[in-house]
Length: 125
Image (cartoon, rainbow, N blue to C red; front, top):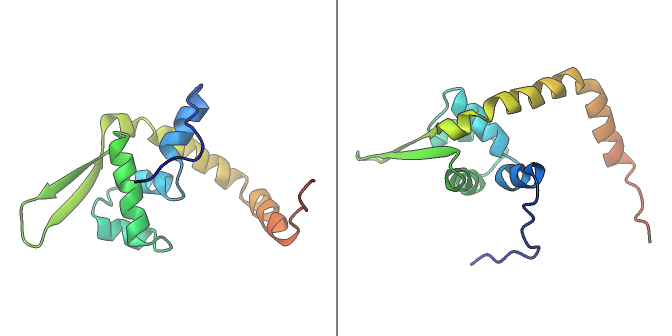
């Protein structure tokens, strides 16, 4: 069983949202589910850089945080779909605002990120 190395810090809204949305693909999963991509295979195609295992783990965490609900249909082969909960839908405007900020600052952000990769600062001792 997984044991945390650093204790939870849930002292403010930023700590809380960080705990719920921490994970490379969670924001994109929420966005794509909202846009109608509900089956795991559809989500995998939309986020092809992520492994199926990682997506499943992050979907399970989103489900645990009550942002998505998983529906399993009783058919053969099994059919699974994810939908946003009402609580999860409240995050969509926040995600949209972050995406818009990223779009408006795309060139600057890309340059900053590439510069950091090419010239990493040496650690301060």
